[in-house]
Image (cartoon, rainbow, N blue to C red; front, side, top):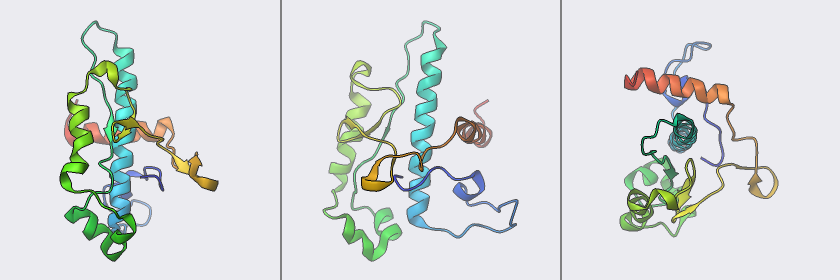
Amino acid sequence: MYNTAFPKWSIAASQVDDEIQELPAYNGQLAYAYAKRGQVLLCERWAEMEKLRGDGELPVTFVSAHPGWTGTKAVHEAYGETASWLEPLRNTWQGAEGICWLCTAAAKDLEPGAFYLDRVPQVKHMAGPFFTEGWFTQNSAEEVDVLLGKADRFCDLS
């Protein structure tokens, strides 16, 4: 996720691109990065929408999370031999622990729209020299609007 912004929908969804009339080449590492970036963007937007709702109902706290590099079949298929660069990989329980904590944490203890790893909000964008907070991986509000519209359409949320 840290190395890319969310791409245009045809690339993220592995659909035929209207401009070049071809399927984009599949890359497991980028597929994971796009999915995780999409989760972060949606949770940020939903947290903003929830804050503006103001209807007196109990608010929903939207957050996204990373399990840390966990030794799953998907990681090994996406990274192959280069998965060793991610070591030490977590076991399944270690990967799930922080996400389970998020599911049971009190809303007052969570930062709406945050991206959590090991129970702590993390930086969402790293780019440039020394991997500082960067703009390269950020999406515009209009790009997030497109993502949200596609999610509504394909999930029949309207």
